[in-house]
Length: 212
Image (tube, rainbow, N blue to C red):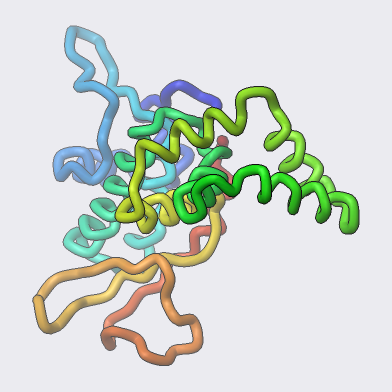
């Protein structure tokens, strides 16, 4: 993310949510400020990730999800963000970090594969990816960050990939056996094997409109 923080008015504008709704989400802990705005005239500040959380919640609310369902979505996303934030790195490193966790020691192999692809199938995307991999210190940064995580963190990190890359869907559904809302990041899109009759798919692609 390029901006250090956003104001409350930024959240309202970018997430397309009413101010009174945001107030409820703040009181319920669905949206989390950087600090409490202590002191006369001090305003709440939010890291840029909270704009994305608020936008997903706003989309969920627009299709009729209640506060309990939104709370389940927020908890899943906030946990993923909190997990990723342990590394204190830019989101553009995320996919490389995941590769290092899943196949440690294969950074140079991945770099060689990217070089081959960039030669055979040149594109702006591959060129940018190759330039990133070839930057001084990039390999060290990826390995250092990957060492912070474990395999149990991968599900959270993959959710961050979707959130930051505006990719795929989230599915919120009512678990009738446990009487609560649950969230999955890789729903079946053909209507088969849905876990519940009450399932809502949230498209994450609109997040691409948000600033990095």
